[in-house]
Amino acid sequence: MSESSQHPAPHPAVPAFEQHRLDELLAAVPERARWRYKPRNASRLWHSKVLRAGVLITLLALSGLVILALVREQTGTHGFLVGIGLATLPVPLLTAAFRWLDRVEPGPWRNLLFAFAWGAFAAALVAILANSFATRWIATATADPASADTLGATVIAPIVEESAKAAAILLIFVFRRRDFTGIVDGVVVAGFTATGFAFTENILYLGNAFGEDQEMGFSGLASVTAATFFVRIVMSPFAHPLFTVLTGLGFGAAALAARHQKIRRVALPLLGLALAMGMHALWNGSTSLFGPWGFYAVYGAFMVPVFGLLTWLTIWSRQRELRTISTELPAYAAAGWLSDAEPCALSSMRARTMARDVALRAHGPAAAHAVSEYERFATSLAFLRHRAHRGTAGPDFVAREQELLHHMWQRKEVAGPALTYAARATGRVWTPPPHRDYGGYNPYRG
Image (cartoon, rainbow, N blue to C red; front, side):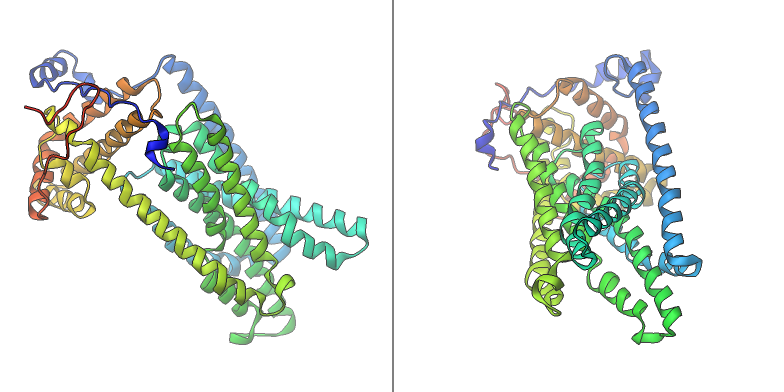
C-alpha cells in the first residue's frame, strides 16, 4: 500500500535537547538511570503479564510432553532418536536466516522462542490430533480410506496446520504489539513458528522412515530414510516457513495500517492465511493432482519462484527500514539529540557493526553492548516517529519517545563517538534532505 493512501499526519514536534536539564534530573533522581516506561496501572498489568506467561509456559510444556510422547510411540525409541538428530540439522540454518533479516530492529528472543515452541509443540499437537480425527471420520463416512488420506492431506492438513501456526503470530501481534511493527517482524515470527512445526513433523517422518528401513532391511542411499531426508531436509527445508510467511506478511501489512482502518487490519491477516493454506494444499496435493512427477513440477515451477519472490520482498522491506531510519532521525540530530553523522551510521548495517567493533576494541565488551543498545533504541525511535507520521502510533507516543531518548542519552557518551567514527570511516556523510515540516517545526531552517 502506498503512503499517500494513508493520509499521513504531520510529524510531531521534536522535543528540545537540554543537556543541563538532563544532568539535573539524573543528579536529583539517580534511579532514573534505570528508568523504564510503564503505562498506567503498571502493577496490575505486570501481574496480568506474569499470569499470562505462566499459563502459556505451562500449556507449551504440557503440549511438548504429549506431542513428543505421541511421536515416540509412532516411531519407536530408535526411530525417535534418529528423527531428532536428522530433524535438528536445518533448524540452526533457518533460524539464523530469519534472525539475519531481523538485524535492523531485532525482536526480543522471548518472542521468537515462544513462536518456535508454539510451532514445535502446540501447533504440532493440534495438527496431529485434528488431522488423524478428520481422516478417520472421512474414511468412516465414505468407506474409502484411500480417498480419505488424499482429502486429509490436500484439504484438512493445510487448513488445520496453517491455522494452528497462525495462532502464534496472532498472539504476538495482540499481546506484544510494540515488538510487531511491520512486514519483517511478521516474516520473522512466522518463520520461527513454522521452523518449530517442521522440526517436530520431520522427527515423525524421518523416525517412521527409519522404522520402515529396520523392518525391510534397507540401508544406505537406497533406504527410505535417505529418500525422506533428501526430500524434506535437503530439497524443501523452507516449505513450511514459506507457507506460514504468507500469513506473517498479512499480519505485517496489518501492523502498518492506520488504527482507523479496522477492515484492512482484519482482512489482510485473513488473506495471508488463505494464501498460506492454498500454497500448502498445492504442495501436499502435487503428486495426486499432477502424477508421479507432480512434486518436481510444483517444486520447480511454483515453490522456487515464490520462495525467490518472498526472499526479495523481505530483503526489500529490510532496506526500507534502513531508509526509514535515515529519513526520521535527522530531525533529532537537528534538535541536538544526535550528532549530524549518527543518522547515516545508524542507517547502514556496515557502519553499525563497525561502531560496535570500535567500542569493543577501545573500551571492552560493556561498551560494545552499550553501542548495540543505543542502535536498537535509535531504530525504535525512528520507527516510532514513522508510525506517528502514518497515524499508527499509540496514545503513549510521547511517553515512549521520552523513554527512548532517555536511554539513548544514557549511552551517548560511548555510542556517539563510535557511530561518528564509523560514519566517516565508511564514507557516509550527512546531507540535509529536502525541506520538510514537522508539525510546524522545520529542523533544517536556520
